Image (cartoon, rainbow, N blue to C red):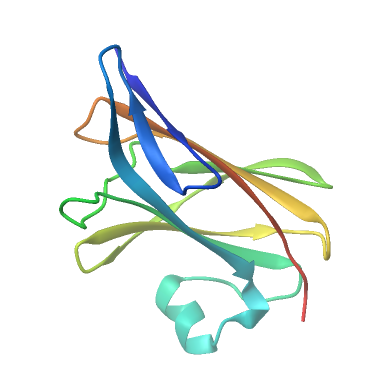
Length: 139
C-alpha cells in the first residue's frame, strides 16, 4: 500500500505519513515565473518556450540526507486558472545529482494560477501530493 506524502505550503517540506510515525521524506523545490523573464540561453537550456502569457515551472523533490532528488513515476501536473484545468506532461531534466521536472503552461495576466502535482516517487513506497499557487504577470 502506498504511503501519502503531503506538503505544507508554509514549511515547504514533505511529510511521510505512516501508521507508526512521521518522518521527513523530501523537500519540494519549485520555481514558477513568466517565460518572458528568461534569457534565451536559459530557455534553450531547459527547453522552455518564451512568449507572453506563457509561464514555466521547475519542480524537484530533494532528499534532505543525500541532497539528491527523487524520480517521479508519472510526472504530470494539473494547472488551474481562469481558462479551466490543464494537465501537463513534465519533462525530466538532470542537473548534477538532481532530477528536475519542467513544463511551460498558459496563464492569465494578473490572475492566480494553481498547481497540483500528485505522483508516486520511484523506488519508494511514497506518493508526492503537492499543491501551490502563484499570481503571474506579463512584462
